[in-house]
Structure formats: structure tokens, C-alpha cells
Image 1: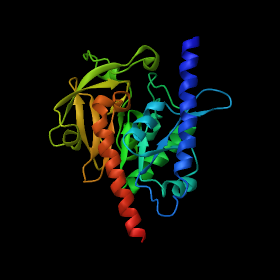
Image 2 (image 1 turned 30 degrees about the vertical axis):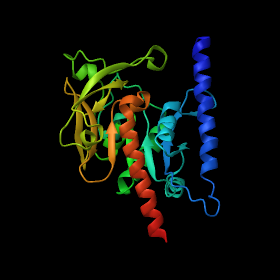
Image 3 (image 1 turned 90 degrees about the horizontal axis):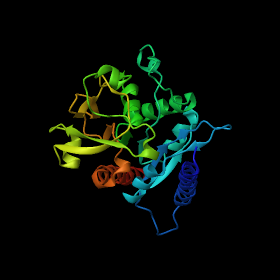
Image 4 (image 1 turned 120 degrees about the horizontal axis):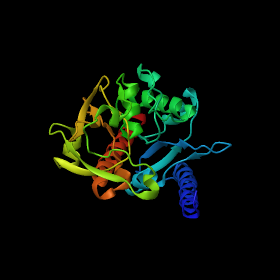
Length: 281
């Protein structure tokens, strides 16, 4: 790894630690007469390959949540029981990108093209996704692998390698070393009857992309929200009124096109927070 790469990595780790400290500060009880209207949004984390393993997060995820007016709280892997205790204090969930989930989770034999994520993370991500689906009013946004996690937990399946399944496609969905060399971009076509169309307000939008897998069959309660020109499913969303949206692209890395999605997500989280607090009175 070059010196520049090490500096960039150290910067992201520092930002992750900083966000964690800020999150903990804001999660302390508010002073009397100073109730916070900012929703608290949990974000799952990556486990890197160091020994001992480190819990890390690419800073754009937390930054996008904070810029949209919410408090990001980082969620390292934990037991299902601990998750129940912690998640009860959250007003929304953001499921982040990462490597590939084991195909056994959706009943398929593993392709040689699969690059598995850390097993501890994949197990925790499934717990998070199932929790999200079970709590019908909780706002949820899935990005890249987070979109796939929601689909798997709903009983859906994935295409394990886009280039193998879409051999005629000229779209570059993957971005090897994108964080260092820059990410590819391509257009996605948003379905007219989707929540995404109402949020973004455009038929077609150019997005930052970095994935070699995608949704194949949407899970129960999900419908397709967007596709790329080659037919790849680029977004799924709840077929009910709840805010549960998964996108394959990376809106956190292009806030010019992603800001409306994050703003709507945070607004729904704020409404969830206020409704929950009113119910508790």
C-alpha cells in the first residue's frame, strides 16, 4: 500500500472514531428543556483484514447522515439479544456496502466469482436486516450490499456475478479500487410508480457504482424500483407505504444526486422518532 493510500485509510479510520465519539455524546440524555429533534440512525460497519480485526466505516456514510440532519451511530457486530436492546433506541437503519454475502443464505451454490465478506459481519448484517423487516414502521435505507441484505432477508435471491450473467452489457458496474482510483458512473432508469421516482423526481439519474452482484428475484414484500439499461436491478423498495429502500449505487459518494434520498430518509426517521416519543407519553 502506498504512502498516499495509507494516509487516506488513516483519515477514514480517524473520521470513523470521531463520528463514534460524537454519536455517543449526542446519545446522552438531553438536558431538561432541551429535547433533541434529531433522529438517531444506526449504521453497520465493515471488519477489515487486520489482526486483531478492526471495525471501520467509510466516512461518507456517516457524513451523509449528519449532513441530512440526523445523528449517526455506528453498530459493530453484536448478539441478537444485544441488538434488540440497542436497536430499540434507534429511529432508522442504514445498511452499508461491502463484499459478498454467502450464497448459501439464498439457497445457491457458490460461484468462483464470489468474494465473501467477513463471516461475523455477514451474520450480523442478516440479524440487522431481519430486525428491520420485522419492525414495520422503522425507516431503512440499504446501499449496495445493504440493498442485497434486505433482499436476502426477505427471501429473495442474487445474481452472483453481473459480467457472467449479462455478457452483452457494456456498463461497468464494478469499480475495483474505486476509493483510490475513482468510481465508475452510469445511468439508472427509475420506475414511474416507485417511491424513488417521487423522491428523486427524475426518470433517469447518473450514479456512482461499485458492485458486481445484484438482486435477481426480489424478496417477499419488495418490488423493483430502478434498473440500468442492461436490465440489472438497481433498486428495490417496499411494496407498502413504509420507507424501506435499497439501492445498488452509492448516493453517499455523490451528494449532488444523493441529497434528496438522504433528506427524505432522515425526515421519515424524524417522523418515526416523534411518533414513538408521543406514544411513550
